[in-house]
Amino acid sequence: MKLFQVGERKIIQHIRRRFAQEGQRLFTGIGDDTAILKASALGPAGTKDLLLTTDVLVEGVDFDFRYCSFHQVGFKAMAANLSDIAAMGGVPRFYLVTLGLSGDISLDQLDQLYEGMADLAHNYKVRLIGGDTSATRNGLFVGITILGEVEKGRALVRSGARVGDHIFVTGNLGDAAAGLELVKTRSQGLTARSSLLLRKSLLPLTQRQFYPVPRIEEGRLFLTNRIASAMIDLSDGLASDLRHICNESRVGAVVEAAALPLSDTLMKYARNIRKDPLMFALTGGEDFELLFTVPEGRISHLMRLTRHKRLRLSRIGKILPRAAGIKLKDDRGRVVPFPARGYEHFKNGQ
Picture: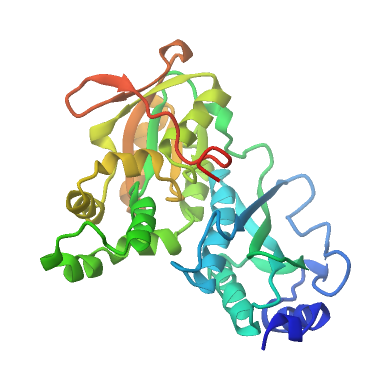
């Protein structure tokens, strides 16, 4: 059944029945003009700061249904927002969803969209408490707002990096961007003999593009153990996001190209399409890993934590004085200019 056959009131009733959750922290959720949370929803008074973040995905700009499903769009929209909470070292609690929907979308497709969000939200016990829907003439608009919490005065922000701090990242870089290119080109450029085999072996790249994992647990560890001095999630690419830290902290940086964590799958893909894998890592974006800085005196504690929790971390550079700028040291030891930027809305042909 198409949404134009259902109507807004019944759509909201359907969403409430399928996806809303009641709880002790909530007075009123879906069905009223606003959600009402109990004053104690974020813990005893004075012990927590409230985190609010919102992210939007727009059809034709952030996703294209020729390459992805409704479930994948919902999952990724939730991941992008959860990653923002992870970057602050926080805990996500509640979310609201704003949708611009074409009447030609079916109720089943709407379910798939919400199921994608709910599948990931469930992993972190994040509850849907409200939102809004509107009709659109062209394409789908998905906006999620997440409410979270963090210990009072302890949120990890971009402005805390200091000269001498070491730069770390979680996980691998560049897989998501390569995965997007892979599905868009449908493996064009791969040798005919090995094309089918490579498509199967490259599935981890598309998985990273459509089902990213927000680093909530890692963010909490870095905050509670007082490891990081500044942190950001890698949504726009290392080239852009490191600049955000440097600009807000008024510092420079040097990144070691040889230290950037690249997966074997990315290396295989890059060889077959004859591209430099570093460009995926530096400018690709949407990895949703954490980029953070660590003071010299906290390195040994981080190493112990890494071994104990089996974290996948890479030390990729160091914070320098602002006058030094942001530099890249290539695999021959030459210092070269850092790439101009990663993804930026209104500057990437949109």
